[in-house]
Length: 192
Image (tube, rainbow, N blue to C red; front, side, top):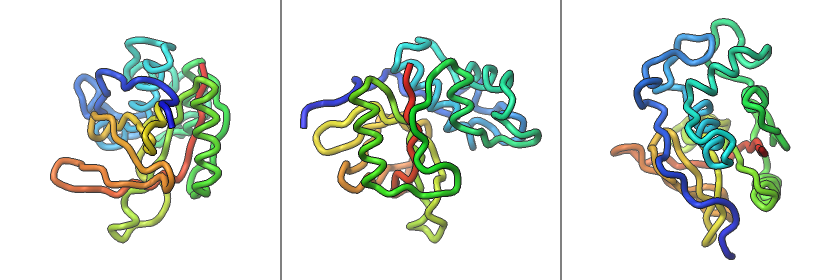
């Protein structure tokens, strides 16, 4: 398969980076460094799509705070499609929504269709099932390229472009000394 999608972004945003890393996310008390992966991923995809070249997680948060239904009072977790819409971007599909796990075949169709149409995908991965956790989403990144049998995405936890196997949408990712096994379980397709 030839490359489908975008070249790797430089730099890859890190959710713990100053000036946002120690600030609270949304309307809660958790910091960007701990739970800011979705806002950081949205800022990254805005850069990839050319929607806002210097977008930061703080810009994403500011737009989200102006829109009803993005953050519940006292919460750091966001309604992801509404946070995307607050940036002036279009949401295509949301497979399969919060707390659910989408089928790999359906996820692959949505991802490939999104990249073919010039979009970028927010991907939610589970990474704690192999360590005794549940199978639902734990972390967000944004998938911008499909190439060489791999799905490539910007990971705000590692500040690197990572990849998972295209057939299984799973694979190991190093977090410092630890290795986490990512499994894509949700996709939100985003278009400019």
